[in-house]
Length: 254
Image (tube, rainbow, N blue to C red; front, side, top):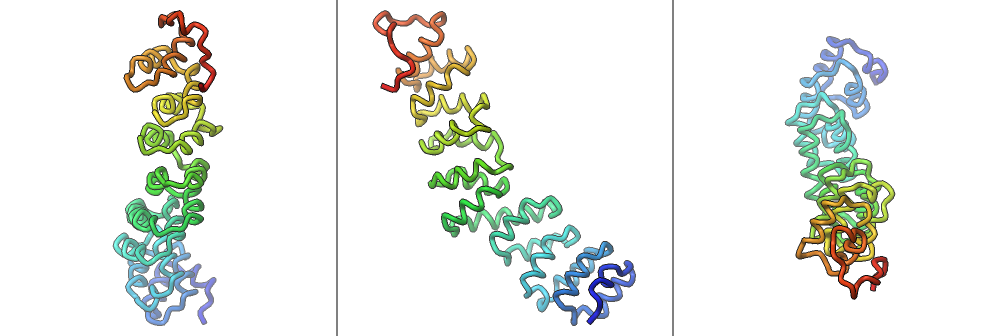
């Protein structure tokens, strides 16, 4: 057997000659050594990718898709034959070319409905942008709770949910209680504006809102009487509070 360390250290010309001479006889370990050689080229990887005997090996398929020098056509073809969690890992690796990651994202989104609850929870914590948008509207609150811990989650993603009629009460409560996101101004405003947000939670956000936003909220037909009275109590100089409501307790949830 060829020394695997020596394969990794072959010069550019020697590596090309080695692959040309041994292509039909290469072992899995030799392929891995070739892929780790700094002089490997797209042409050499393309030659390996065309060998069905080699790409029938799952580990070889993964390594070929993951390699930055793999010709795009070969990588995109092979992503169809990778397991979900390998695709999930590769989708967030910056060394994988962007066009290949886009092909991976398509596969991930197409397969997400086949996942168990446990798999969705595990995936939500570390997935990329494409799956984040899918998991935002997952019906199980445990998936959303896991998604909140995802370092790739953006404020815009949460605003999309918090402003949607598809948001659940559980999701809105999780956002309102989250240490990272609940202090963002846009998030506070979105929570107050969503009719599904429990009114005690919405009312607790009012004191953090700007005057102009409070006035806009007060004028919205969709704003509940309860929140209007809370705003009036909070900004008595801006609104005339009816005498019979002067003793109204804005902090209650009655």
